[in-house]
Amino acid sequence: MSPSHRAPRRLTRRHLLGMAGGLAAVPVVAVAAQQVRSDQSAAEATSSPGRGVPSAAPSAAAAPKVITKGGGSVPFKPGHALLGSYLSLDGRTATQSQALRREQLGRDERIVHVFYDWADSLPTAIDGIPAKAVPLVSWRGTAYDDITSGRSDDRIARAARRLKRQDRPVLLRWGWEMNGDWYAWGAARNGQDPEAYIASWRRLHDIFAEEKARNVSWVWSPNWNSAPIEDWNTYQALYPGDKYVDWVGVSGYNLHRETPDTLFGPIYRAFAARKPIMISEVGSMDRGGRTKADWITLFADWVEAHPAVGGVVWFDTDTHPGYAEKWRIDTDAASLAAYVAMAKRPRFSG
Image 1 (cartoon, rainbow, N blue to C red):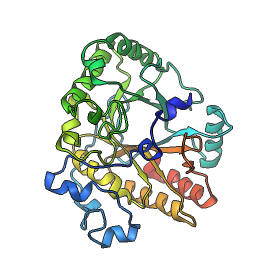
Image 2: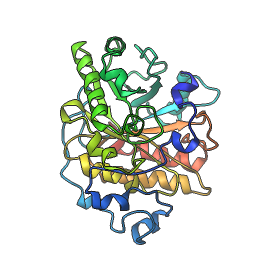
Image 3: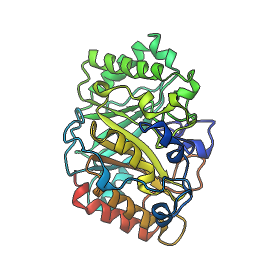
Image 4: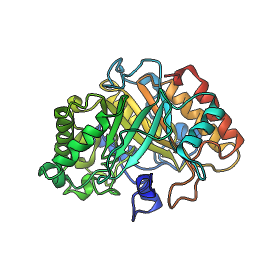
């Protein structure tokens, strides 16, 4: 795929991973405490109030009753999480990159994440995908009026027919991180109108249904926090409805020593009783020593403690435009070992 599939043009490094903002599907009085970034260590985040995260973040024991079914054409399997990645390694083809990870992990990816622009033809096949893997197709959005007006109906129908031709179930993640101000399809850039986002999502969904693209499973995937922090930009305001969503995804990166629960706990607690949860983008900065390895282990423990998580998709790349950070899992031996250990846990054997 081209660099444009991997990163939006004309955006800053901060915007590319959705660094600003807020959260939702929680009472408004709690939003301010939960919507800012944390500069704390894992230890600080669990013990020190007033430093950017709630002083009493709910533990796994306080988690809601969780869903035990769902996922559409990619069914949720209780006790198991599909482990995969967006994989793009410098100097290697997709097939070569998959071969390297297979050798390192002793297993194939279960999700293969790919990105496409709104104007692209969506894939009828994915290069290098393992036989039993599920494609996660992230399809960029557009201005809501391009969809709600009906001008894009033919494009959407063609996309549905192309994904229908894949010989396997497909996860479709359209218009992700809609609660940020860094993409053209965000509510912040579309009149602050969450209802228009929902109408766009539902129109896509209905056209895919008309085309009988039954192998497509729909992943609604906000960023872990919102920008700006406004009532119209919350999870609740932007959610298309249970009928139109198969998986609830979330993007979150350890950029400022955020704990996994800071990144993923709020959306888990908001939706785990209704839909299976997918960590659709995740990665960790390396601050030297074992910082990255220890965070990977902390993240694996968090997933173990949260049974509604049915998918984890790492941002495994060193080719992302504009980034000095290398997000690939094997930046050092300790990080690779931690990731391999995670992949070998029964929880990630989906």
